[in-house]
Length: 331
Image (cartoon, rainbow, N blue to C red; front, side):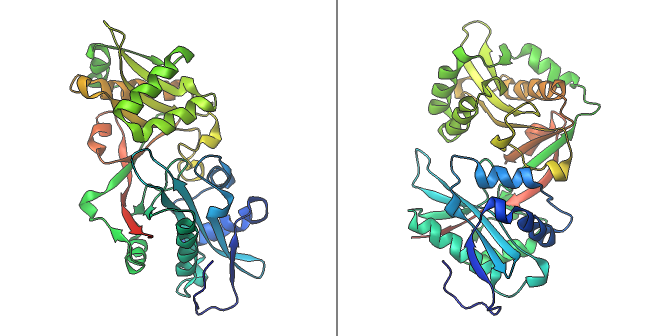
């Protein structure tokens, strides 16, 4: 726990308890972020209670009497090709308590807990379920804060992006429809007999996405995986993950119900095998996936954490927010 000396002595930091703290954290969140990045209890529950990378001891609140005046949410991530690291998913302090060292105390507490758990590094932004892929560029003071706390923050020209599209009047463009027709692949939702192939495909081509696909299958949402198989050989060439109002909502593929409106959906983890790139299969998957989101009553579609926004813009998406990446060594 934090052992420094902030200049507001009558507050404490302890573990987040969803039943006790959710309503107060939502109030602190609104105070901290104002009219941007609004969330509801479902989003908080997905981050705080979803099994997987999140553990109860990774989230903390700053409390003054019976008021929550700050919060921090973190997660531990173990990837097959990297040491254990932590992700800082969200941190905020109620506006009337800014500049009293509370954010610094919360961050120190989260970093200490991650280090004790064995993490060698902490990164800004979370894995699924997540709020932010990193630090929003519309909050420049946030990036400045992390720099003062020893984080390396990337230059704006190395940003990652979230994109959105209103599907109310969506029609697949002629160019994207042509890709779907001429890419030489059959596009369809995955069936149980495809699951082993999907996991082997990602273990080979995109190992960092393999856990996400495994989780979608494990919670019974395998049909939310859109696959592309070669028309001639049947070989698996590409995949993406869809999220609709009919999916298990606590998967948390997108958490911005309060900010973007409902019904809300998402596309993520679009991947095409190295040998099949250049045939338009990726754009065909995005186009067909967007059609399926609309067919499942999605009004707003979200694409998160990409460094190639122009690819998605071809299918009608537009940049919602840009984010600067950052990290700090813990040991």
